[in-house]
Figure (cartoon, rainbow, N blue to C red):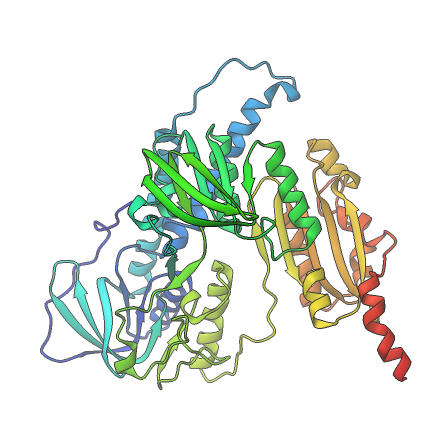
Length: 491
């Protein structure tokens, strides 16, 4: 959805650089919080944004996708209405109305962002910014004119974009990314999703619930393959029940046709070549940092071999006075982490020593039901040789889930063997993201797991499931026992 109308008038280019306390390139979460906060504190702040006021989250990513996903959940409820005693006639899904609902939300969010710039006094400049020297940025405005800005501090916040693999024919097929998928005005007849990560599984389920046939191709043996086996098995079972066709251990060899019309994907699966025909392709295979053409080299800013800006634990780049926040800095690719990067920057510019190391990184995959995790998974604990006790119960034991008739999934936690400290928590189930937050707060406060076991929690709520989880009998996985034996033998 174009935001070109959401601009502030900018003065004509001056002969010399305009001086600012802070210049920010990219208006995503970390950057906009920096702009509004420091401008409200009386500093002169310039925000340079190429296209999306507020960055990707309110425009083309987090919030629009959750809007679409919720509509898909409503469609699922409509199809299941007889389970709830509601007689159902036929209904027709209007994707243009689905898109319109999403666009209305986005427009409201943009208005809120524009008001925040006006109220804070931060200057929003619509255009493309690139370095032309140390702490100096040239902005090509959307009307073609240019300005030069110099900041006491400059912040790179240019985020990432969807990767399109160099598979023969893929780019020529003009595949959907998450951006175009959220702008569909018709239900695809057959959507072929490439990539079984967070974005791939969320949109695969949503578009399937709108009525599309969906196939999902992944090079790994499981969807969400980095997660524990019980998680990947649960996601696989969910997709099987919903009629989504997983094509795993598959390497795509070539693509032909045009997405939106007719496409053909040729893949090799377990040594056998097979062809998947569809009408649309959605690519969700990873992200690429937006550092190309940014001119970082002339500013003394180094990037990694993957193109991310090199930063230390304080988010300082290799050039004095230049910082990077959010995904472009290699931070975990979540909006809430970009927000935390803002706090790191704010504290350090004001003389503190706030670092990114050691922070808990929660996340939630918004399938239905959700999958949420914070802290260590079993795979990670085993890889690091960390012994643990395992607590695990089915969602069916949670009475609120019973009342909702949403009993698919489980709760799981890892607790240290030498203390009662919670090492990690996972929930595949209804409301998983909210339940996870309660455990995360306990972990941040270094509370023992028995604090949650013995807490007085409202009934009937989903978080009450923590009583059942931490009141269950833990097991010590065999891998953990083996890991501990050498230590005991050397004692």
